[in-house]
Length: 134
Image (cartoon, helix red, strand yellow):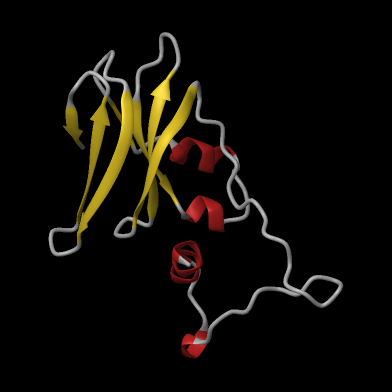
């Protein structure tokens, strides 16, 4: 999976390119899936997401509540791999945010990664009829 690959790359990977098998539960079967990252979006609701494989992030389209504008946020996958959100990690979480104009009304998001340029672009479709590129 993309998350496993990002974690392996971030934390040194596995020697010789070996594949990691899922841990076994007490009964001998595969362990149950678990939540790797659980974050409060600070007054908003995620309405769309896409993967930024170049920057190893998840791009979120976040609709803000009353008095809080819509935004696009890039969440580093390393926070999911690092074993929890300490105070420092929580501060990093929202450094990659781009505010959208008031009343934009984000409804969808798509990400394009251009490795040759070292750039990631996110296109946000909005209910005001606008298309924003960040």
